[in-house]
Length: 133
Image (cartoon, rainbow, N blue to C red):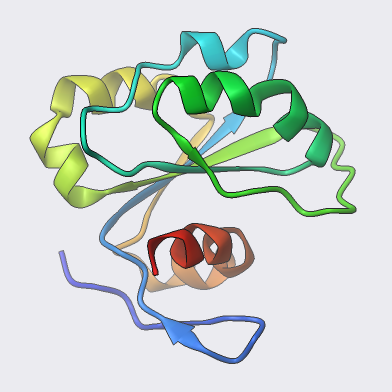
């Protein structure tokens, strides 16, 4: 896979997203996070929420499983609460069983090898990229 073009952030800087995937998971239960597989040792998988209330409800459980929570928009009130997880290609390749277990939780999976997906998801990717800087 080749890296997509740089993502222009709200602050005007540009960052190249890592190869990998962004998973979008609908938070359909109070115990959603408890069903996630733990992050493999010494790996960084970032997670954001679409609302502060979803973050309050699920962040602690996600962090206990090894996910790094990178935030939620302060004033968002989406009709459906969602978690977005950024998984790099090296983790996908090194831990295929874990990846398949995680991917079963996703409503959608966006490959970051595709420029249009990266452009569409720029606002969602920004806090994930900032956590990796």
